[in-house]
Length: 421
Image (cartoon, rainbow, N blue to C red):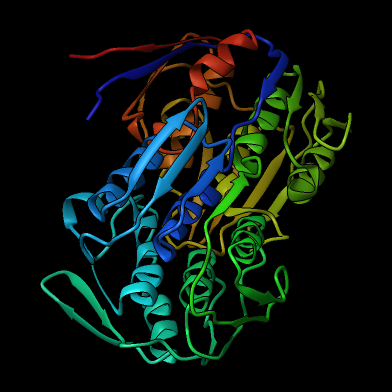
């Protein structure tokens, strides 16, 4: 595991344009979808991220043959070499639970180590398992593994107790090869869910209701391959939008998707930033001289995304007044707060609510990332802190941001990755 750290000398205004990469949270389930067919699958606009490399290694373990050129990946799994996803792979990435549905649907059995990944709460997979049981799977837990069996999945009905993106996608994948029609209620409406549903439809699956709480899937006897281009990463887009606003800069966010970012755009405008749509794919963000405080509550899409909470908390440290942030999605997602406070932030936590006192004088210091979005928030803090900030454990950052330090440097930031023995 790389022990590099990122060093930032703060105080520079960001200017220029930044190209947005493909969405990690759509790429991982899209790659898992290749398990549903023996045909060739082609995915374009794939970001160069650690999580992508991990998923490709897992697929190779299952017998995948893959090749890549630029940001395009070709994958084919003619014969499954295994139905077990070992702990050494799965512990690195929670999204590996997405292997459960397609393995079970194609082979009648799946054995997957209980997943790891970011430490931002328990994030149980019980909803995934119950959805599989609604289609006739028999589930057992032993020795840290989930084992699912079903000679042939059958259409069923399941209501998610809470909205879950990966649970919705996993269930759609499994139901695509089940006998009969499956009905899922209280489904996630995130863009990544819609993308994966459209990808499955291009493979021959019959799916209705994408983008609504109720999704119907009529199973097919077999599925073809696919050739799809990933949607832009809305969280990467939002992160650079905040970076522009908090440095009082002017940055063109290129090749993004504004309709996925309505809640983020609204919050930035409410804070005083100028946000203009330059085209259907580009957004121009200009920071305000004075940042207005905000009260934000994270919600499932189309609400304010939990994956932007940490970045906005850093931004609101600079606001002229007191802000509040309510986290409703994950129970342990304020782990970045002690590190921000090391830089001079004034934040108090009461349960799931954070109160941020603005006008903070941030001063550089060594800090440690605890999860993916926390690491991004610390980099943002370093952009405006006086002196030098060193962000350690950036392997978290590398899981979800493609070449972040290089993209920020092109915008004028004084930032570099420093190898550490």
